[in-house]
Length: 252
Image: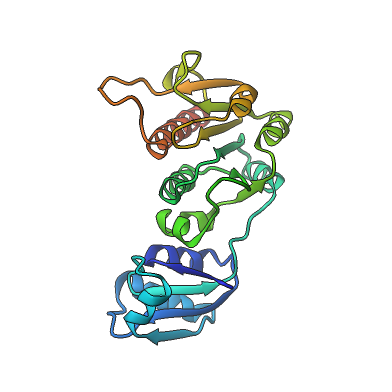
């Protein structure tokens, strides 16, 4: 079964990235083909994707009432890469590695939000385990507004072993965790080859993952709520790390 991507931003970015094989574009009959939808139809024509206009109720049926915004794209599965491809991208750009590791995060919305932030800040690759974690499904693509189509994502069997591999490549692995041993995220130097690790909703980082990290960082809290959503916390640290790294490059 081919993937069926949905949502205007997700479909547009998949077509722009051109990393998948496309079968056909489904557009709700009668929809105004202007703005983003107009861009989608135009790009589909440029890359030779057949456009089929169908009844909106048929889209609702096929997508089980997901918020498809009147468009869907039949295409091949998400093109995962190898960890070495992520590290190679950093080398190609002449930049210190910047990776994001997701330790069994399962909620598609959280994964999508983190992938969107990762793409915005120029992460070279995202690593996630192949079991007990969200994959790059159409729901994740939609939640990322299509950003994941421009990212390199590697799926690994053993995240703890992968951390060791990353460290052997000269990359510092930093866990984001509300732990008494953690440093406040803006009081440590993140201008280095860096892999940020985010733990699952609720339990946080797995014990073995936490132990393999070079050090931990946390976000200070002032209010009554005990912690931030993982996507919010992760996005804050990702953005901070990017700004620190950019400032370091400017100075050099």
